[in-house]
Length: 260
Image (cartoon, rainbow, N blue to C red; front, top):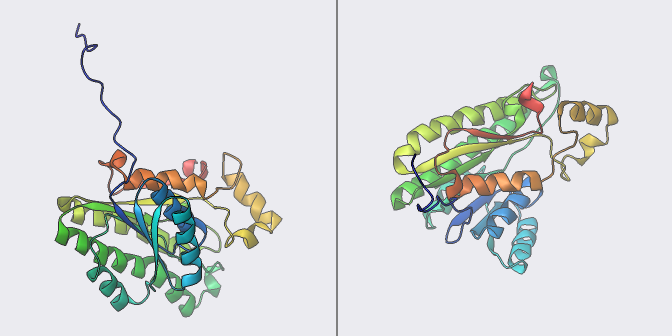
């Protein structure tokens, strides 16, 4: 029988992100704010982007006060020319968190073309071209990297009044899998995080409807809404060497919603 007692034990790959540059879109509030903080706490130098400066400046200030490295840059990811210029003028990021998104919940028969364009453009089109520009710089500099797209459990199931949101988030899942295949030869990974309903200022109004809240809690088998902290570990994992062999997949953080 083989005796391994004298052999060196394997070491867990590091979850640390020291020396890496990370970009988080929609970083001024809610999940984006938390993900930027998580990456900074793991040692990454984080660039926070959004359309207006006040919120991202406040988050960047908080990260620096906590001992991290952060900068805030005003960038509208809907302006694809500005997105391309943004990446062209900077060294490659090794981590992208595609977080900017929106939702217009209503029955499908009431959805307008303007609703469709607003949700699909931000949640899908702009995520696609932000990732394209970021990956282009990664490829040019040859350092590999990790693309992390914030999807949703609604990218794995359907939901009433969520036709546009589901369409965009299911598309994100397919997009990420195809990215993974295209980018694997360059050492670039692409994965999604698919959270359940998370308590944020943006979702607060939904939960004031007791019938809606009860329906959500009935589907979350662990019996509670998600918090931003529930998503923070997932983003550090996917950004780090601890997930080095993961690409083209989804981390579903849903308390059991999609298990049945």
